[in-house]
Image (cartoon, rainbow over all chains, first blue to last red; front, side, top):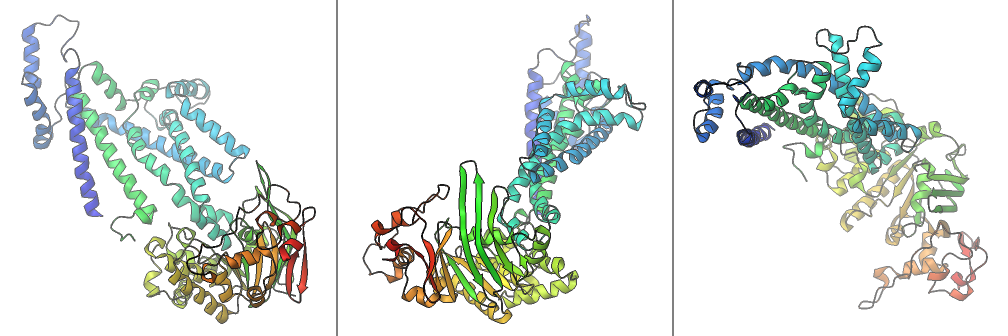
Length: 309
Length: 325
């Protein structure tokens, strides 16, 4: 088990390094440079700034310097657009995204999983049909439609809910809903599929022949296997949820991390871009690993270290 | 009266392509401690008739159209409703299935699966149930049962899993054990062991066994009475001895003829030509007519279904002149 985890983490390092390389050269391929503005700045001033950020060095030197600085000094360089260390910017915005993402995931699981299970039990009934239609709509309607709809029809009518802003705990609700509903829809469909697959298995018939009542049949015999596809999906999607969404953060004015993905590109701020990209990649690696470990716990056949026959 | 009496059971599947008459008027009975066999090709309705008894078929599309199955002189399994049925299946009627590789839950430990009938039906506490489960694993010949019980199904071989299934089905001392082709998915050496095991446990517990198979060799070994099924109906019913000595129906004779061991070496093996009839079409006349090579095809009934008739004491057969000639 421990060997598996270490192995996967080393693989993850490799993934992160590849991600770094691609992002680095893509950022370098962008036209212009961080200090290109409409203001008429003298060449000397630009050269001075380039020297501060180390952008005057050769491309190869820059490519090596960034990871070496991370490893030796723990420094992710200064953001060229904000003039602050990238790690500080992430440390400041990530907690907001984390809270929002966690709430969104909670909503997604609480809505999606039960809906999927019920649909599977009542296959081809109007309940199933209705739930799956709603799920399909949930998948198709983008966040920039759901968000404003929630603002117009819910926030403006319910006291205590603000249309936008990030201060009181109640402010989490609407952005979390916007973010969570799509995930809920995916989860519902995946759970339904997984449950249907399991419910058609021979061992369900065995359990029935033993006299297991139908509610226990679902919870004890079917749920464990039926949730596996949903878990495989939750891993990476959780990473996406907690690293923030530019759209949702913009609609609801949340000071999260998602904005930096877009703003860094617009400002040609390659260090901020590298920072958030690597951080996102790190989350993906960790969440995928977590999902795999959880799958191993749920399904003894893929459990690690056990002797397979 | 017998322990279980099935009368005129009809189970139809209502599918998009019409009504499939999987079981079309089947009657049989099982006495206490006895073993009956139900034999037939794939699709002849043998498994469906037993699944119908325990309400294991998905309804819809399946529907029990007619019939009764009186268990222990009092309960009609087909009409008693899910609640009553649940107290019977797994407790008084146990069942084992064809494929032990897929019939055990891969996500649960053997222990949790095997004690389930005890906890559900006997309201036994977990510790006591575990003790009994270990004991019953020992009885079906699983080595180191107190160790093995904490394993998962994938850590067992096919034969071992079938032993677990048997232990699980018999753990509540049921009055009837329905065995749905329990040896089909196993290799021959294991088959013999499993058959012996079923017989031993049956003698020890006094369980009646309904044995579903397409293997006549298995029937000759363990059954006292045989029902030959074809196209959803029983075509011949008799004790095992007279079935092998004086088979009447052309279908039975064809089946016996196609046993490889009975054939001359070097000759082509006999097979019954064609396929079983499509039971979604209404069959007029004798269902076996088109495949009948051993009897006289021309004499087979074409307008009315043959009657089920006792031609000799205890020997019933579908009375079709073409199939009996």
